[in-house]
Image 1: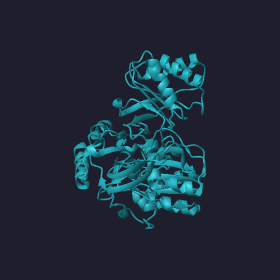
Image 2 (image 1 turned 90 degrees about the vertical axis):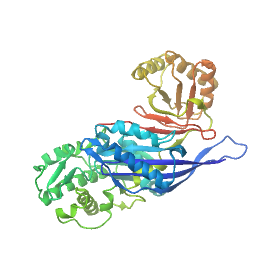
Image 3 (image 1 turned 90 degrees about the horizontal axis):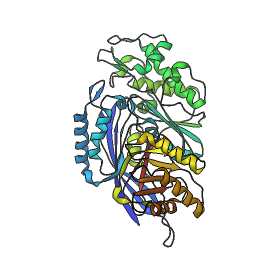
Image 4 (image 1 turned 180 degrees about the vertical axis):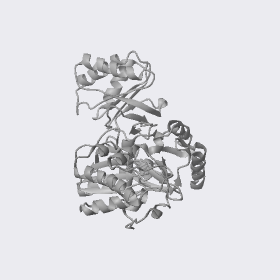
Length: 466
């Protein structure tokens, strides 16, 4: 069995907007008389759009009409229709995710998405997608070393660490090329409030419509570059550096190899010097200077910098080719209620039946008006009695809810559990029970229509206006 599905990746970033189309091949890799083992076996990019400057109505609003025209035109150029898209991601990244109308723009763009495309704004998922798109996962798998990818855009740096091809950390910082922007006469047109603590700590007094001293700009970009270096070397950050984190800090780790992607990475690997403010005017921001600072500071400390497979396109390629996972093959689902989107995860802890029921009831109160998905690891090979006990606990805890029962098990017994739940509810509720997927509290999940005997799954975060 082989099936080819069409995927879209759309990235609306602080500085640029772009999209790609990919073909993803899904195959049954098991033998004729074995349980099906459905896997993604190939990913091929078939179209890359032009890279556009992200259109804004103001510093606080995205120009939705122009964004829509850009995407519509690129669909026509690629000779692809919306109805043909099966999976992928539309993501709003960096400072664009903080714009007043970011959530409305994302929801409205779903018309370009087909039945099952993630719409998301959340730094961790974006960091992971960019890391895959840049090739950091592949490098870590081949070398068996820790590899950190910093995807540096206009407003944020989305960062991910891989070991043996697996994600071990993801985090983001307010570091980007458009945090300070310029008018044509070299005066400052914009200063992001996110870097005001840095300016204060460096005793710098930049002002809108004033022309900054070039060496003072270098002090700012050197500070930002040094913050990334300290993270890689596991050195303590000062107060201003610590305030750059978005949502949460990084885990304690030391990386053997470092990779840079995103728009600013073009200047990290260009090896051109930046000596005066006029050299920043092509882009009208500190992006080229930030790339120059990163290159110099990392080289001074003899850190191994690897050139990525993709630079400015890393996030959009990750969105179009790496956002989807495949569930296990032995699962239970009512296909008529799929696809479902933006389902919050309720992660269950271990405990007695009474404790688990109370845990479910208390946690699901937060989501009385939406579907929820219960998630837990489970035993590797539970007995039939254990499966029955889990099923009855779940059904009892959710008896006050009328929405479908959605269960995500990390280990491989979703079919047995799902069938047992269906027997208990006796067609009074729809049931989806999938395995082979790891999730955490705070995650959201999208589950698509079935492909053969499996379903496509995307785990994500939905965060605006941080």
